[in-house]
Image (cartoon, helix red, strand yellow):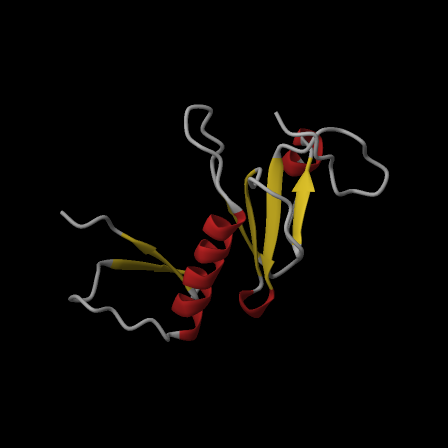
Amino acid sequence: MTNRRCSRSTCGAPAVATLTYVYADSTAVLGPLALRAEPGCYDLCRAHATNLSAPRGWEMIRLPADAGAARASTDDLMALADAVRQVGLGTDQPSSPEPNLARRKGHLAIVADPE
């Protein structure tokens, strides 16, 4: 169990989730509590994570917090943010044939698992 607290200034509750912003893509990623505190990431308690909303015009990505799965590290969240950025900028150069993409809201894509 971690002793980290919610990043909200008036809250002293234990942190259970980590929030990361991808400003270039107007995307907020909320996932399981990172293994360690990182600059630019915000730890949130259960109440603040549940009630969190993204600014108008932003995409909100909520990663499930599976009880049986290992917690995501900040590196995992940053890798996800980088992947979202690459899709948004169109800079991803797949080394294999083009995957099946389902476009949504123009700059994000859902990639189907290979069969």
